[in-house]
Length: 312
Image 1 (cartoon, rainbow, N blue to C red):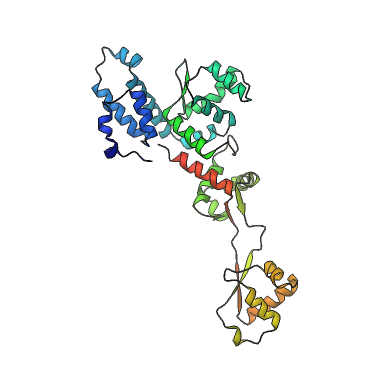
Image 2: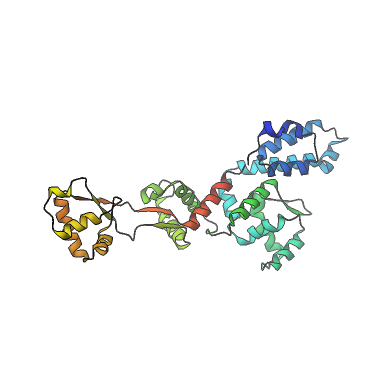
């Protein structure tokens, strides 16, 4: 769902409802963080506080606007996407997002909630887990309670939607994510992937993705397929086996091994007949490129990565 200013009359929203309620509703309606910030700025213009101190301490519009401005700065910072992804590669942090998604909470209470889910940490260690989430603009610590930011709420909802549990290596340079998102568009050869990942890191990156069953490649398959030409079989004198072989080759092509199994002769004889059929211009062969593509799990993860990268 997208937020259409014309349909939703964003200009008039500054007059209706509390700022906290309104900002959350706008986000649920599909508005971007920038659109929500603009409405909060318009609301601020209508406000006439008794003093600046009262504005800072008690005005919820000012607090929402400040939060959105801080989020905007975080999203606009260099390498934000990498910070975001690395912050979420840890199951504890994903669980923290889930807990904070229910309500703002004190650090001690968060420690207890995580303990119930099997994550037992001191408050000092827990603070270390929280820091990357705060740096990515996902959570806010007012000094009293921890809460999800509006941006963190969007990320948390996307995590829940895709069932993301963190299948990528922590503290990486983001090469795995880069490859997964690239393969979402189409399969790629190793040469094509070198445009996305440095040569010294590509082999390790691909190995990690294969070990996690996120990508597949056809390096273990037959690299040559055989195809029929348009030449009529009636133009050549063929043995029964040669004819059967020609008729067994599908339009999409077939490997010599698969053809051998189809017509029931050994592989060595299959190659011998194929050579003779190539000489008669009835068959030709084509090299199959060694490319990488996403597994079913990899597709789901790549779609998740693509979606959170587009959240604004």
